Amino acid sequence: MTQAQNLRALLEQDTCHMMPCCFDALSAKLIAQEGYALTFMSGFAASASRLGEPDLGLMSYGEVVDQVNNITSAINIPLIGDGDTGYGNAMNVRRTVAGFAKAGCAAVMIEDQLAPKRCGHTPGKAVVSRDEAFDRIRAAVDQREALREKGGDILILARTDARYEHGLGEAIARAEVFAELGADILFVEAPTSESEMRDVCGALPGPKMANIVEGGDTPDLPIELLHEIGYSIATYPLTLMASAMQAMVTTLRDMRCGTRPDLMDFGELRERIGFDAYYEGSEQYASSRRGSGGQ
Image (cartoon, rainbow, N blue to C red; front, top):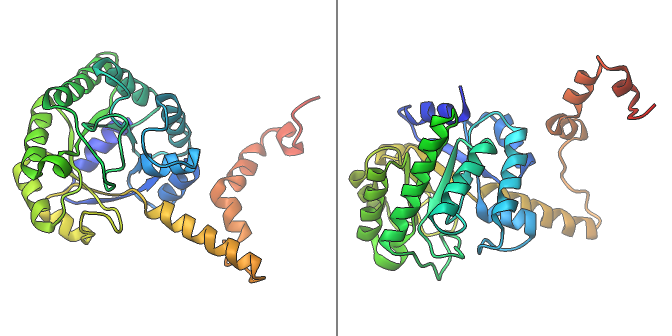
């Protein structure tokens, strides 16, 4: 099965999948090692990791696809990639979908924010007109179908941020049209209460995704309740990034004070990164055992 097919099979299950988000190959590898069924490359976290800059449209299409390539090469579970606004007009959206599919993504997210986009839980968001939003999703779906004709595949995750500027009704109306256009997964960003989340799931067909940002606008509800409300995926875009940053800052401060940091055992660290698997695989090659790359 392709990763797109794997994702479809997961979405058919009667559950809400907890989806921790990665930001690079190592964080994705850890998610897979801990038995999670799928992951998402968070644009917020990837921009912070790769550029050391906020998620305000600073990463280019090429940089994002490169990051996706690194991640899909390291894992064997479905990855959903953050395609932002598609990086231009409808034809750019088609190129984005094709590029993410070629890089091995199971799905790509396309949203209706004005470019440059902003994190969904920060102020100042604005969305494009309905017509432009619909053109983006129509183009994404058209490219998905073109890929299928050539043996490729990818799912389209359609996102709207209209709740912030225009209210929940407008966001639901946009998402309804996204579904009619053929989007595979719907994502209404930043509902602000459990009641709004129920309104979203009650009004929209097919799989829906909830975005849980600790300290953000959307309630951090238990996964069982999210399933009961009607969500198929609960994504946690900043949990690993925030945890890693907190651990690194704490360790740096402890080192200055002479305190021994609480570290992962060196043996486990090597094993999780892949040293043990490398050495085991290299046993069949004499030059690899010697560590020689030349004569």
